Length: 112
Length: 116
Image 1 (cartoon, rainbow over the protein chains, first blue to last red):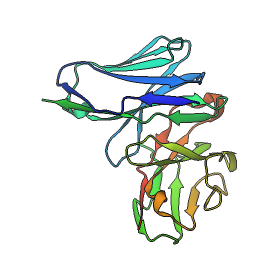
Image 2: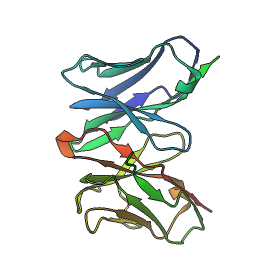
Image 3: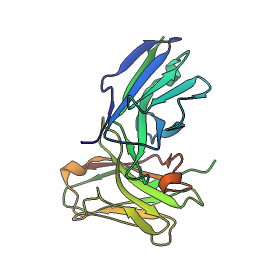
């Protein structure tokens, strides 16, 4: 069956450290993968998109890697801040390229 | 900055009642999506429109849910009758294009439904 898996347990880290979140998928061949941030009670907000032929993408303190062999994407936030605390969702373009399917999300808590 | 508008933000209803949600996408966005998000889970696609046409409604429970986008602009999602298991956040999103060119999705703030 097709699955998109993200750590269900919350990730707690100290301010200033690098947070690393994982997105694993099975039985998909996505053309690209996206990461979104979602605050409680709000809609998701787009962060980054990485295509299947790209290994790494950066935006300010954010870095995303995409390994189509391992079927995994890693999402890094460097020099993390309490304001980075939120749920982070990965999403794959699936269904023959017509459908964006989301993972369950990982909650990140950055502590002082 | 352009935003996706949704209403109502919150809706409490009793089971077996009818409920409707409205979405106005960003101007010029051809593709409109309705997602359902149960607490602690990721958004699940219910229906996707390209202009006024349905592209994907494979996960829409058609016995009780309906969606329309008559003029290819704003959209309405209806549930009749509502069931306890329908309690969730209903998210509307839009994108400039769809299919293989789908870029980022712009989400509204969502409509939180509680069915009693």
